[in-house]
Length: 220
Length: 220
DNA sequence: GTCTATATTAAGATAGAC
DNA sequence: GTCTATCTTAATATAGAC
Image 1 (cartoon, helix red, strand yellow):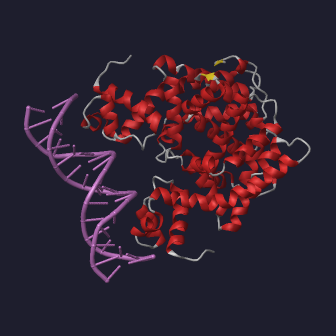
Image 2 (tube, rainbow over the protein chains, first blue to last red; image 1 turned 45 degrees about the vertical axis):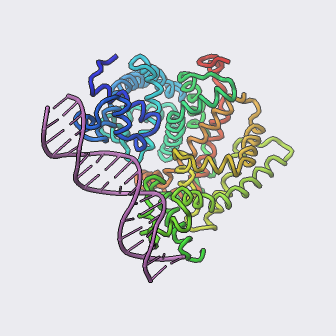
Image 3 (cartoon, helix red, strand yellow; image 1 turned 30 degrees about the vertical axis):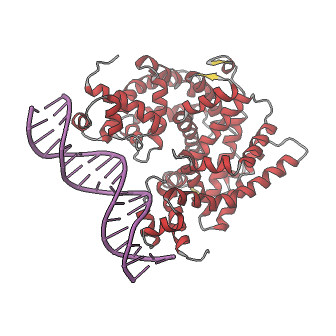
């Protein structure tokens, strides 16, 4: 556990509240009162709310991204063509490893990812494009290797369909697992949820291209 | 085109701005200035911002839901088992019909749907559960008919994965089509996008259940 | 129904004493 | 580094003249 400096108290409270309520709906007043620090200390230590959001995301991305990058490297170094299932599987271990980093780390990061991507300010997109562009490149390389038949356009759309499923599911994973628990008596943990996503995504990305979609509504 | 009363001017400006920027990021000041009406008229005619949001959504849902309901009735009345592809296809015509209702109606409704569902206030969920519960029932009935092997738990999750793809894609459909246009020179219209979603969703919902997902992370 | 003017609330940010 | 007190801005909502 990290030493409880004022900075860490703020980060810890902020990540939990951001995950639960989103960035816009979490005021600095709420964060500082939960963290039991003075309101002014956020601006003293981080400069602005925006910078605080980035600091919260950075703490997780620094753990997650190198692990994901390594997993993709292994897949790309192999002789044989990977399956889509294997490509999506390489996200799972880096995701689950966050539970060793902080308690409920996987769950918090999942919600932050969902929030961060939908958020209109695009905090997460900033990280992905400016800090982790190389990892993005590896992701697309792996998917293309697994399913080389997709045209660039078809590929683009399916990656975004995938992103939609992931972002939406991650952002509301806790609420959805609560429903599943009360309605189906099904006690799914975060790992179980991530593992359920994989076959859905692999099948969607690997779906046969509809014959009519080559002509309908598309002009080249 | 509807008569340009103050009420309609407000609704027209509001639906466009809500679709573009989301509900929270659209102030009444912006709406009334774009609609060229007085700020106070929103509260006079609608009572509150929340009520205005509901009125905007209602105008579209009243068009869309009966059409969808009929399409699902037809599918369910047929003798033979529908395919998942057919089930998702039954959303397409009601969606496209909105272009006859208002100019760019399909596109605006798609974005509103995405916004309305992600939105933390849950405006859209309110409509679905209190006003259109019967349509929801028909949707689940049709999917279950098309893929009866899914367990209730598996079914629940796959419906939400589907919802994620749809909501995310719809909310950002314009931005994504812009990227596709500039990067791949691919001019996809709204209909083309909707038709591209169908095979992805059908394949995902119909994916084989992973052997390990029956045990890992699930306790019954 | 429409307008101006204003009340009210809540947010992010900062000045300045300690 | 931390605290109190305050500034500034921008939002929803409403009172009351016309």
